[in-house]
View 1 (cartoon, rainbow, N blue to C red):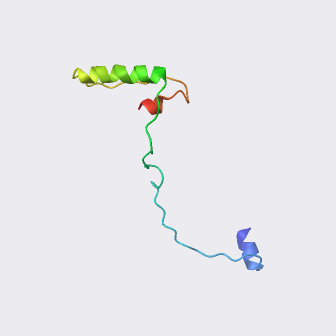
View 2: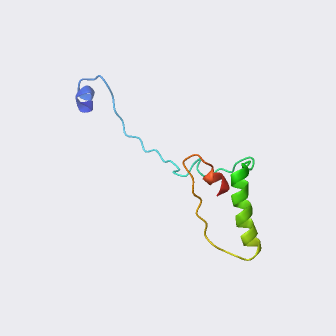
View 3: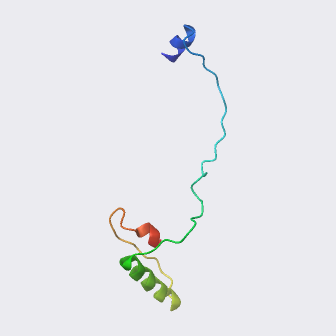
Length: 73
């Protein structure tokens, strides 16, 4: 359909090379730290307490979408 419009002189097409940065806007620093709620603070304090004792392990943060897991991460 586009070619037909072009042939009829309704539209004009042109090729243009556009270079984009796929990471633009994805790794910007936040201006301020997140304020954690009580449950988030409890989770972070528990992990820091273990870390301070020399315990290095992986944690699984469980919660529904929008519950604040990313802020803790």
